[in-house]
Structures are given as C-alpha cells and as structure tokens.
Image (spheres, one colour):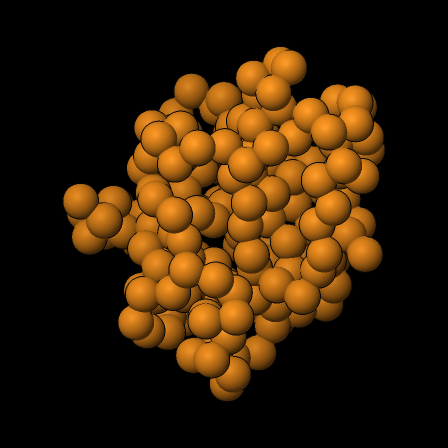
Length: 169
C-alpha cells in the first residue's frame, strides 16, 4: 500500500513540475534515527506530530524543523484551544486521514486528506528560513524527499491546505 501511495504522490509532484531529491534509507521512527542518513543533505529536515484537539476533535499536523522543541501546552494556548487540549492522535486516525502510520507522517501526506479535515501548522522557518530545500517523508519512513520551500507551499496549496505559520523556538 505504501508503495502505491508513494507512487501517487510522486506522480502529483511530477504533474506540478516539482523537482525533488531523494535519500532512500532503512525504516526510521524518530528524527534521531533519520538524521544519521541525512548528514549530507542541505536544507531543513522536518519532524512531524499528528495531534488532536480533545475538545473540538480537530486534527492537526504539526511540521517543524527537526531541531525545534514543540511544547503542546504552549502550542495549544497559541492556537486558542486552551491549556492542555492538544494530544497525540491515535495511529488509526492518522491511517484514516493521511494513509500513513507511525513514523511516516509529513505534510506530503496531506495529498490524501481529501476532505481537508486536517489543519497544518507549519514552522515558519521551513518556508522563510532561507533553506535551499525542505526534507520530508514521501508516505514512507524508508525515504526522505527534498524540495524547494516554494514548491512545498505550491504543493500544499494544490491539496487545499493553507498552512498556519508559527515561529517555533
């Protein structure tokens, strides 16, 4: 299934004329594991959290530079959700909405959120930090794709997901 979804994503990127680079690697489930394979890439590497607002039941994909800290309490307050309302969403919700499991979520999986029910909170630095590339998983945790920040934004707009930008510490 992951191979078919990745092929569909790559076709979409080609159709949008988005040039990518790719690093294939063994399965990784943490940023620390992944970084060992990405030492030679330039640009920003992302880490992603799939969250749920426990009161409103809203799903959030938070995509930040790999070396950023994400404080869920502060983030919940910033989004006006109240203290302590953001939690990690379960894997079943991620599989249903993004078609990926643990360790494979990235903004690229929003291609499969066709009802646009997942909100994207994106680290402002990924788009405006002067990076030559932004690196994300392409529907699998066995590869990492790199693309220009402007192409990532164009892809997100194509999927109907206008990112909410946030400056993470």
